[in-house]
Amino acid sequence: ADTASRPMSKANSTRSNNQAGRTSDGELEEEQGAALLMEASSSLRTTTEVAGTAAPEAPAGTAASRVEIAPEYGVIMIKGALTVAEQKRVMKTIKLPKAKGPVPASFVVSHGDPGTDGRIEFFHTMGERFFTIAAEQIRAAVPEEQMKAEPAFNHLLRHLTGEAPVKVHHVAGMGYTMATKLTNHTDCPKSLFTMSVAIGHTCDFVLGQKTPRPHAKERNGPPVTIQMESGDAMFFDAGCIPHAIARIVPKTAPAHWNEEFARVSMLFREPDWLR
Image (cartoon, rainbow, N blue to C red; front, top):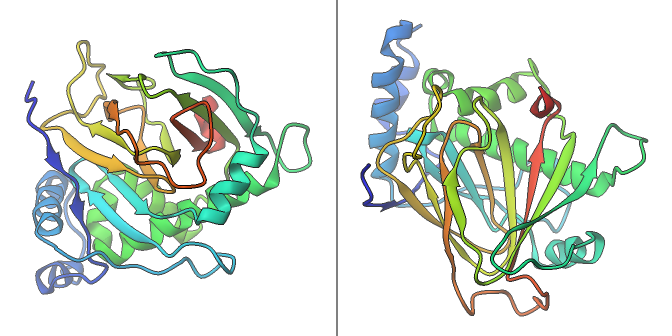
């Protein structure tokens, strides 16, 4: 497997003239999907600006959305998705387990349908906001035909069209000490669209590296390394895209961070994650 990593590309919310032309060409044949994605990857990789605004329904005081995209793996990261105030509220609300040294510690943040025990509405509203921001930013950066060709982006498109309105059902948590490394893996042998939100120290997050025993739906290739900072949110297919945490970067936590863990992440998932 190719072990060289490249940084994630930044995305401008304005389409290029070439992309806009393709948008109006009419329907594309299914067999053109792979080539179309390659073109999207190339065009987005050359952009140099990051742009975006908060989602229309975002509450006052929430962070604006700058995005970075790895189109070859269907990944979009919202930089600074959580404000400092929101990060503090999250850490006051969740119930952290004891740290387990180099082993990631998993825990439940919130789950279930509205009105059920174990559900904290604050987290579900937050997750749905991030899904919406990701969907709107992808639609601004990628023509619809290209969104349809990439399963993860098409999933977000279905949220926007109302075909499958976003509904966060389960929010899981993971706690990492400074010594923790997350081994390269996929979460399951099928698509598992996930919104991951980080608080604490920055980590080097690697996407796309081939696993030792890839399942039939694994999508691997040249790995992409991103730095996920406190407050960032990332949407990706955790079932089909290999991912790992190579390291947690010392002395990168925000000033308010005072936890046993070096980093805490929340994983927002929709009802079909159970199937």
